[in-house]
Image (cartoon, rainbow, N blue to C red; front, side, top):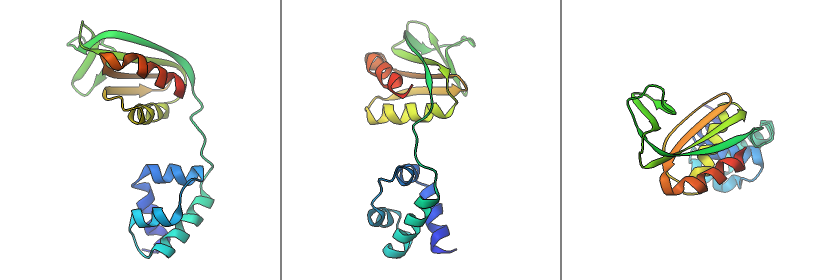
Length: 154
């Protein structure tokens, strides 16, 4: 495999490097050291060429409304707010809060929401999304902060 191919493969394994390349904020030498796939200079040059081929970073084009629902917990109700695998979360007097976003966005907006919640150090208990809807479940006390974070994405 060529240095360029190996570098691109390594970047795909680390999405934050990919996003940084698209945003034009990567120090190529530091990224080459981090990826550790070969000679630092050659990998740095491959990163530079790869970055030139990528589309420019743009935040998600998302618009919507955000609501908060308290008293969320695991439930047997199949009509819950969120179902992931065999676990369903709904309003049942539980210890969590659900943040529900609806509007004009695709499922990739959930990725942006989760990334922003992570950087805000808000632990996500469960999450799901589809075109036009995203729901995250957080600890009750984190609810108001999570609402602000999700509103910031939308």
